[in-house]
Length: 353
Image (tube, rainbow, N blue to C red; front, top):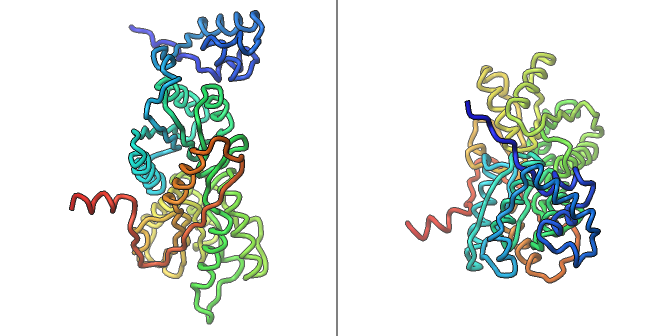
């Protein structure tokens, strides 16, 4: 039986094994360590580790680093929701408008896979990298900086490179207020009838929770910890959270803030297992936009994150010689029920209509 080969090491792996920074490892591997006055003993250690752990690199691509390949990369966490697929479509259109070739890849929200994927992109001599929703954007920054690749964070911020993200706090405030105001004043929503489901401990979720709680306190008077039900970005975990709530309370909350379209899918899976009466008197707010959700039999208010403006700002910043390391916020849009908006594919479809 053929044995499966060991996984080849990345620059980040060699950094951990050697106790040196990723930029030091990169300098040793690309032969510039003497210019950086790195000790010979350190270089020998890294070279031996690279050989021992089967590190390889695309030497032909590395030799082309001084020229422009015309490739521009977008690193996504996943492809399987409308938000990131729309971002990919907008990105491709922007890159082609600059006369370059887009390369779109995902890393499944796995920090090690993110680094390995970025190393592969670097080996193909990409000119720039847009880092979207990375679990560890600062480690990706270290690799890009060592390779001399311009890069920028979008969707989730890092601390070492400029970031362009949705204003999640203001978006959550708008969505929470819209949910509360949707109820008939004769039967107003009570504080213990409004819950937030979904998300995890990342910047976007924290800001959405903060906006949700601030408006809930302002309009309903209180916001207890129990009103937050984190489930991660998982339909299955979200469905289980709704099942547990329903089993415990015998009903759903009347007001629901759902933290993403992935979590919204979990709500729909739960609903598929229960009669219509279970959710006859609910208002749902979803922090993502999908036109199909807008036409469900119960009110679904949505937040559409403006990927086109986010990317336009990111392209503007990445062309600057030394962009300031700060977070740039892009205002999202509140979408009321029974609304279908145009998306990034419409311009392409119109051309070939």
